[in-house]
Image (cartoon, rainbow, N blue to C red; front, top):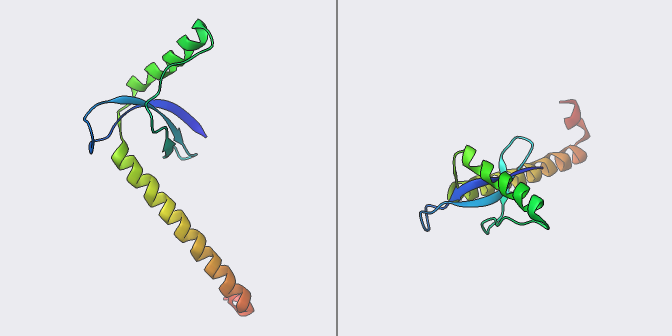
Length: 103
């Protein structure tokens, strides 16, 4: 799973930008993100610098509308669940009707 830091905003709340850690699937679609804004951290100065530099890259991309991202994540979950139910239905139908495999 790919991840990075992104500028994010939520129009339904305060119109402010924050940096969040965002995770993507193999098709580069957002699958989840950290609810709380990111904070730079490190065990030493170099590690802190590396983490901060990674966060700084968030300014290279367009900000993410978290309200919209939430809707897309939810719709994908519903779609995946529907597809799973449909696949099970077809498997059960085929199991109860052996001739349906030859159709």
